[in-house]
Image 1 (cartoon, rainbow, N blue to C red):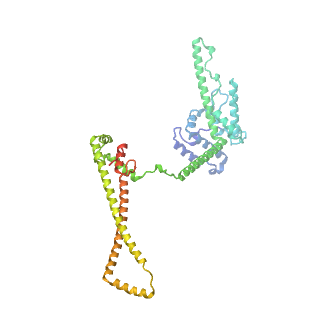
Image 2: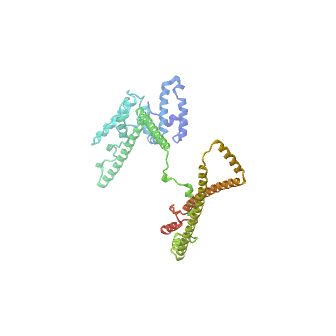
Length: 437
């Protein structure tokens, strides 16, 4: 069956756009579909196959451009002196079905590439690497893959000397001969370039319609999708593990917010204070210069003496109060123990004498003198209780004052505690730990 022009099959012009080609293909496919023409199924089947081939070529910009350049050669055959005319093989009319029959896809193109290989080996001194196109049962990997890789980068080794325009023997002189050689070389290079380009386009045309290549690409796409899915699952599992890991902050990395903000506020103030002289300085250098001055040292010595005197007076007074309270408590306890011993020395009496004694005792108790003695004993007990409470209070107050004094005598820089303020001031002077106000 002679090939027909693809533009005429679709009923469009050569300048038609991609959208026009698509619309024309849908319309023609609907009109010429074998199911729509049951009276002429065989003819419509061939026409429908040509319409599909025309759309495949014209919808691809690269194939359409090549078809436009070689349309005349494909339709009417090549007029050049090529031994093999490959132009008719750029149409689906070159084969009939995808099988190994005489007109089948695999037989037609296998014979074509074998013929092209023979031509290359005849005109080239170098050995041509033979490849195998295979049949319907051939696997794509590795034979067919190597075949298409080799022919996709095809570059002919033929000389194309039969296309020379001039015979060098006809040249009248050397200058004309050189011009003839130059013109013939130009023609050969052009023919070699066009021929190589034609074969590479033929390989693309065949590979695009080869069912074995299509199956290989589908399988490859499935494998790539599976690989992407596995990679995606691995990433999800890794992210899940990262989310499950609970970060535990170390103790050394924890920050006390209250202390941090207090320190920040103090740093913002940026003021240095001399506790002895009750003065403030903006820089640490000013504070150090002040601490080495005579006035500061004199004030510091006076403060030390004053504190020593206050400490002595305070401890002497506290000791005297404690001793006086303890002496009074001892006197009261001795008096009570003496009275208790006198009561214990009374000998037991018989019942009669005991009754008389009880009557006498009641009379004595009811007497004004005995009432006065009982009142005095109650007062003594109250005094003892008050004294014991005062002693406990004095001890508690003393502990609280010591604790308060201990807290007051703490260096704010290094948090070290001192028993006296003198020790604190010595530490401040030696270490230079001036605290921010």
